[in-house]
Length: 131
Image (cartoon, rainbow, N blue to C red; front, side, top):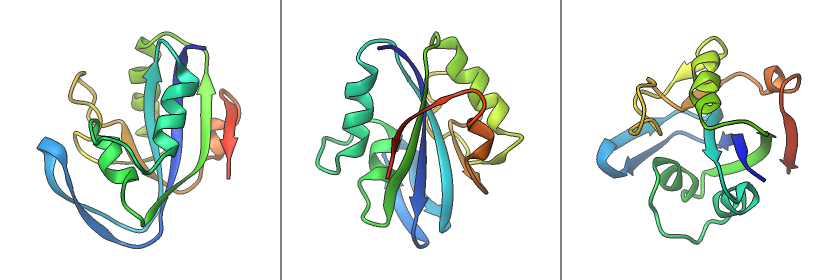
């Protein structure tokens, strides 16, 4: 399977982390939505995100590696990679972007957003995983 995905991440309490080349970042407690894509092996990419024990490579790896974070839900959609950025752009209306997070290979402001809930994804995406 290939497509785009959204990880719904719970940050249980405020944390300060070094996120690769982005440096030190603060994350308030709350719910976050991270947009990504995998044009090959979508299931394996999501499985990697769900594991705590992995090499830290992408910005999201650093956030998910912390014990204060947990993926609570994953949405997927069979779509071309270009829709990843379109979805990230649409998420600006639903949440507060975490500047430059996950978007070093595109022109998006961010691919991580602090959101109030994930209900807005129910109409256009399929639930792949739910804790």
